[in-house]
Length: 103
Image 1 (cartoon, rainbow, N blue to C red):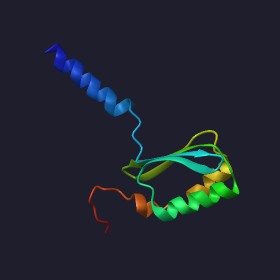
Image 2: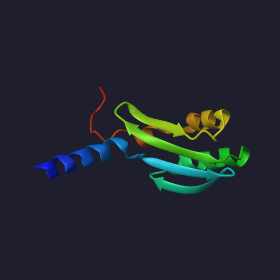
Image 3: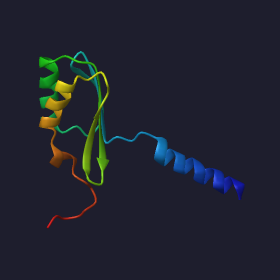
Image 4: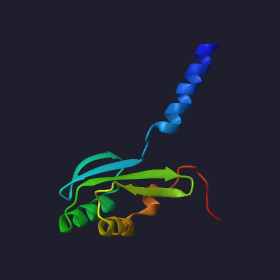
């Protein structure tokens, strides 16, 4: 019986503590170093262009929440660059997979 409680505790810890973004992008000198997840082509092109004009290091993560996608940037990414990326972010490209229809 104790092993069931331990396994349940490990599963709950994994669900809460493990970082699970839909998209993770690592930048080095404004260039995309590593991509993990679905990165829509148009958004990727826009982000590359922003990086070429304003070189920066850091990472960007996109989380899928019930209310929609959420962008999270590392502290190294300048606020101006963060805002430019938010402006070109395709909210439709990261729509919720719940199957609900609006209206």
